[in-house]
Image (cartoon, rainbow, N blue to C red; front, side, top):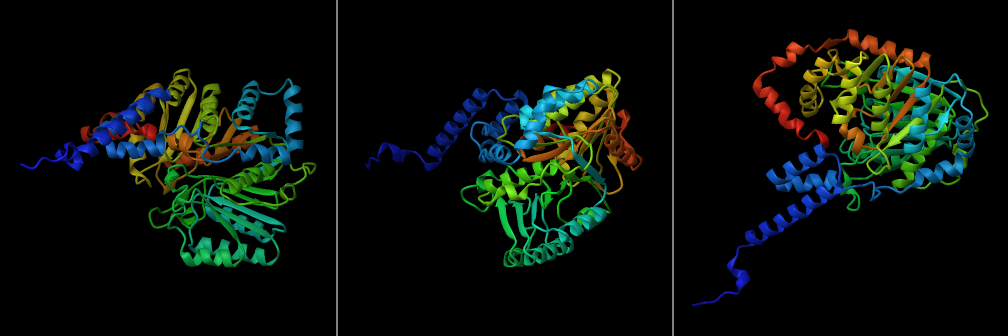
Length: 489
């Protein structure tokens, strides 16, 4: 009889299972010790136990506490300190002696965002809104063509289609005139969006390009779940653009999937453009780029542009605080008369949900517009339905946009404070993406944005409580199953 060593009596699968069980146990302990939101923890554990291989992958992508392990360096603080000293001093003076007629809710929000995101309040600003792509990109290209010193662009999605070709040609032309042009692409959002020929032409034309967390880079590719969702254009440090629209023809005509595209973007002039410049520089350097003579890219703060108080708020998975989630919660909690929310998706946690319910029960008018059917992503669309019944019973009104795709991201309270930017009303934007929003403390500008909301309402369909109650059993079950993964979406 042949006697095999002890370890040979077991198949390789036996040892693989032991390793798998040990990994599941270790991850379970780490989840429990993280003391994170119970809904997130339960969702993660369910995936881990029922589909362990997928659960392990989800944990690696979503479960690491990046607040303790920074994905990118703390470069923004250094850039702000080195180049924005005058703006910082102005804010300190303002907060020391706040005028008595200032709205108390606005003052609290300014202080919260300063502490949580380092968001400097600037007063000397001008802001204008765009509600569709044709006018936006026409103005952007004209401003690019007028650039004299620098053009900095940072986008989640950038397509090499007709619009992309126009912008590429304009950028290459400006390089030939001596303008320094830098373009930052998100590695995931731009994956397979541009042809090799297009990227080669940009580089040969002198445009400096980099990827933020390139998925093909072995050092950063495993961080593909943490996307840079920001859309920023800064020209000569004097003109800035930010908002929901990426670079692609569908943002003008809806593309192949939609008959039209509704979005919101802003153009900025004044001191706040320096903050956009600082955010771009930080993201560029965090992506391995360098910028010599940084101070030359910032505009002097003496020039007068207007009197619109603004804050630029950023957040990311490794930020010290979830600044944009806290902004949305604070706005909802402080509203006295009206809350208007525009977002393509609606996947929130219990805190935001309860804040909306509390506001509605207290008599505050709450209206939400989101993308209708067909959406661009079905799972978030299904999950959103699981919130409707309870929120509608409390008094919240939900509307599905019915004329093309709805991609706007803004929030208005009491016609006096508004925010617009890249942040969706979902957990991915709140917790996982690098986002940027503009907060506007101005009654006139908030009213302008409210007018856009009212026009959107006219092009939307109201969701009734009866419709929610009569949704078929299988659809309700499907939606509820995906709701279990809401903290991970």
